[in-house]
Image (cartoon, rainbow, N blue to C red; front, side, top):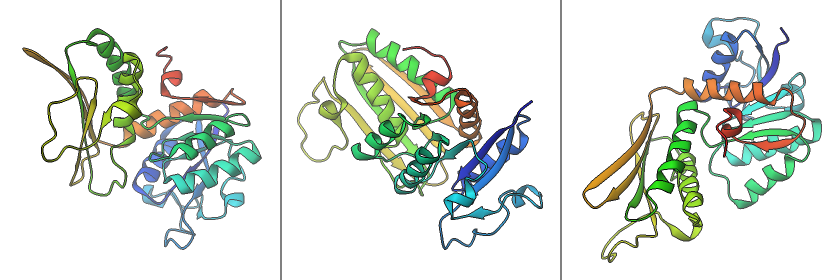
Length: 269
């Protein structure tokens, strides 16, 4: 069996460690590189030391060194870092699995442009369960298109820097598309004071930040006399790591193109 040669960005962080552990346990994957931020105390340390492995790949800041043997980079970092990695990977033919959130329109455009040169899976959430939930939300939105108000509630740990979460926004996009709406025009991200009656065409978002919550998402369809709630709750980041590896496997025979987890899981459109 040929091993997937994978590098991990943000190797010293919580998600990076989850990815490294998942790669170490996968019979068809090999960690060939580990990237960190220049100046970090993690630079020069062994990426898999926390697993008790010695002689493992060292965490480096230099992209040429960290990506020298990789066929795919898995990146769950910050937009500015991911875009820097993207430019290098596009130039050197290295596929990417991008789970980073918080991109602006220019960042998303850069990812689309890079997909003309390399194969990319870009998804705000790599969880298999979350992506199945997105499919259920599409079905629910079409069935409940009239007479139901839609609210999206998400909760994450205190360290998360963007809001609403990328997953919540993706849920909103899926629902808006199913209803023939533009999320940019119908989203409401905060309510305060005298807001007036709720506009039935809007999709509301509520954000909670606190503690060590990995990630909870609930979409509420509130009608007269009943409420339908579709929820997904993450108890560990391991599900994101396993999904990212599944995405890397999907890219193994792809040369170019932009894909998401719906493609990886063959959930259709």
